[in-house]
Image (cartoon, rainbow, N blue to C red; front, side, top):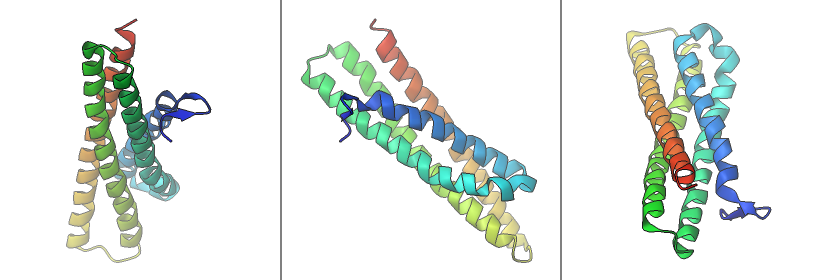
Length: 161
C-alpha cells in the first residue's frame, strides 16, 4: 500500500502532506497558546490538525520504510543507504514527536474549552499553563525533527546527482 500511488513512488507524494500539516499544527499550537482571544476561531483547526498531522507523518514514515526496502533490494550503494537510514531515523522521531504534539494539542483545546465554562481556580490555571508548556516543547521537537528529516532526505537525493 505504501510503495506506489497510481504507479508513482508513494513516499515523495505522501511527504507533501506531512510537510504541510506538521508545520500548520506547530503554528496553530503556538498561536493558540499565546493568543487566547483567537482560540474560539482556530480551535477547530488545531483539533483537525492534531489528528491529521500525525496521520500524515505516519503515512510518510511508512512509505519511507517501503522505499528503503526497495533501495536495499535494488542494491543501492552503502553510502546512499547510510544517508537514507539517517533520514529514516529522523523521520521516525518526527512521527513520534508529531503524534505527541497532536495528542497534547487536542488535550489543550479540550481543556481550555471546558475550562472556559467553569470558574477559574489556581489548579486549573496551573494545568492550563502546564499544557501550554508541554505543547510548546512538543512543537519545538516536532519542528526540529521535521526539519532534520527534510534536510537529510534532500541531501540523500541531491548529493548523489
